[in-house]
Length: 291
Image (cartoon, rainbow, N blue to C red; front, side, top):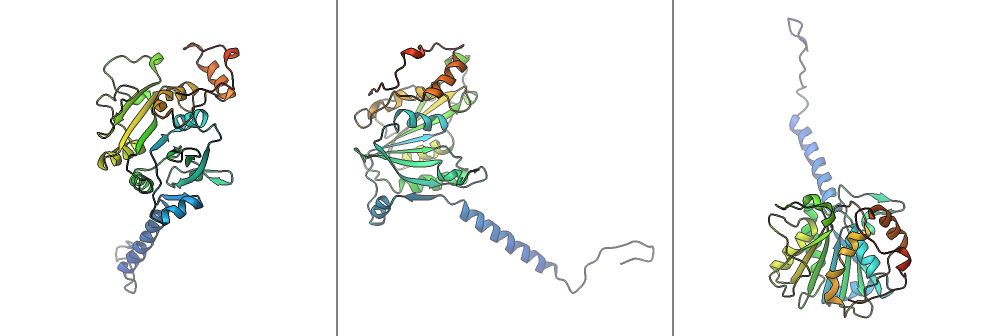
């Protein structure tokens, strides 16, 4: 539409209602939100035996639940505990969010959160989490997992990776002091932690914090061992730092001293300038030990 002075004005036809367009857009946005919320829902998938037991109203009888969050914590359990043939995969948690990535022929969340149960001691359950769990999924994950476990006489041990850059201290922290452990536990945890407590103002975040908070509210004995490391990614020295955390389970599980040779060799040359290592010829791949 042009005015007397030649100005061009954009006007809407009287036959079109602006409210109709806004309503259509709102409905479309709402549909997208519902689909995203549904996709972000944490799902647990158990093997047929566990599924049948849960449907019958019988929760998993678990005396020790070991949760490893992070690649080093999960790799520690893989190399030192799950290396034996006495563990069966009994379930997994599917977590999809904005940081999910797909690998060849398999979604990353399908293998990034797996539950294992000891064949000889079924009361010992292990979970490895190497995927990112978003803030809005932490409560879902915690509630759904612990809803499947019998809380009576349950002890929860959480192994968590952390960066030494996030560790706050008034003293000078040299690179040779990392990696190191710090602990944080619930009031129901009566055992003595294997390392000193996490100093203020340091905090635990993410899934370990959600699990610890759940256990504190429900009066479950739980302890979080946070390993602060100066190395990004899987590292044999960082993994070995977790070894004292499973001393209380020495009678229940066998901890293998066998370690992946190629991983050890890679880290040996990478860190030999800073720390002393045993000679490679003195390392036996078939040595096993118990805590």
